[in-house]
Image 1 (cartoon, rainbow, N blue to C red):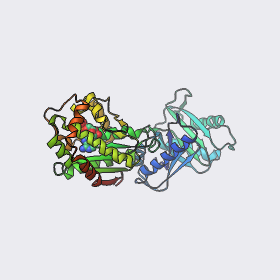
Image 2 (image 1 turned 90 degrees about the vertical axis):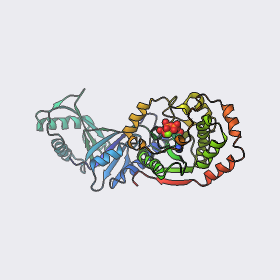
Image 3 (image 1 turned 180 degrees about the vertical axis):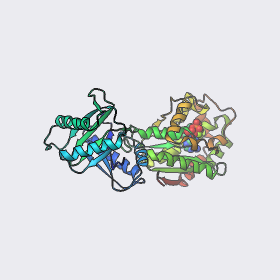
Image 4 (image 1 turned 30 degrees about the vertical axis):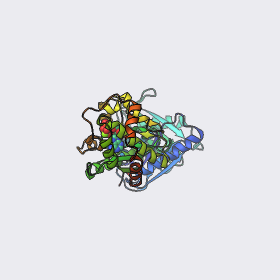
Length: 395
Ligand code: ATP
Ligand code: MG
């Protein structure tokens, strides 16, 4: 079966008036982003529908895989398109389609008609009944079931004819760009790419910041984070990845602060730097992959101390998830295999044997005073020497 086009269904709850146009426009933009690497598609909005029509050759599996990464899409219907919308043409296209699509026409069905072209000489009900009759005449094993059919045969009469019987599930969520932008703290681990995916599923565009500590962390570790950013950008759209050299800050913390507080203090400076880039780039929040109790730096007390370092809201979509649930999602979105590559992370290199699990903010802030002679310069240098990489899924 060769499909020339897709009809895209999208969640419409709460999407009314002006918001609806924003929602649809963002969806179209993101569909272009997803389909451009697959082939040449014309995407257009038409009275509550979005159509993607192939203008040339394309791979069906690739196209549906690409569309299934576009947040906001609830269903992907592969459709056949008929150029003429007269009764004979509609009937012929429908019968040909059914014969080609289904080898065994032994099921119950219901014809559904939508008429955008109101000049068509039959009502929707009349046309549905007419086409149902034709199907029964041609295919003897078909039966009508108007309440719970195996197959809904949908026929839309517009300037052209659109026929479909299948709806592949979309990812749901809201189109990227409909809910502002946030800064993801992206490490090479399992959790932060999943956190980025979850936030962007709600329509939030992402930037990302990665802290590395050369020569303690390698080029390969950095490349792994670039790869992870590319993997999630399939869903999130293009990402500006800010890469920050964190070595000198880490060394200073290591030399001057109590070792059991290293991770918390490090994490607080990460927040401050990520927040700087966030504000510079119109992000309205920070996103991390933290989950309560996962490690010492993610107890309620630790999260309290980390939070206090930022003025922007910190979003932690994995906060209530078990590691196994996060892993399942990482597998589903395709980041797991890359996340478990065994390259060193800057946090693990300077980690204390017995980190505090119940840090107190006043104690941590007192420890940070030991950095007062050097930290401003170090932060300034770290910010000024950032490297920015622009990442797109198809690169
Ligand atoms: P992940 O799988 O996301 O690395 P993790 O369990 O290893 O999570 P931590 O290392 O404690 O957790 O980090 C907690 C969060 O802090 C991460 O999810 C990420 O958002 C942020 N983070 C940690 N290390 C870095 C880093 N090197 N660069 C950027 N963000 C980081
Ligand atoms: Mg980590």
